Image (cartoon, rainbow, N blue to C red; front, side, top):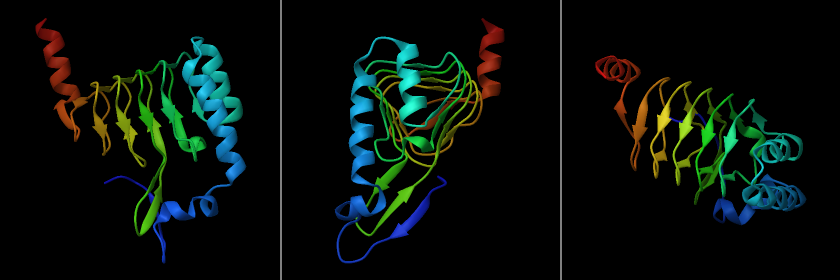
Length: 170
């Protein structure tokens, strides 16, 4: 189960009340910063933009590929550890607006994690150290440290122990 805070709404769907949950100017600022970062080829500049303007917790030597889309409303709820790679066009969501409620949750990505291209990570998910997420995955639950996961919805392909056994055979 993902760890999110849930907020019920009445009268209209939760997205209709978006600017009651997050200030409009914050969203505008975040949009501009994210668009600049999505296209810049300089990894250190991306990390600086994320840390400075979005208050994301980004580890040393972490790499965000071209077109990565951090959460536009709550980027400060995203933490990425050291030496991790977030693949091309990946979406990191810290919020989800539903019909009768909205949810907000931290996204925590450990150290030495590889997230493949075109992956979506939902709010409230933790990805453990040394994990690998295959391309085009929907990460809807926690990923154990050292595991290899993938698919839509995501499933564990190999556990850490199975990955180590495979490495010993080769």
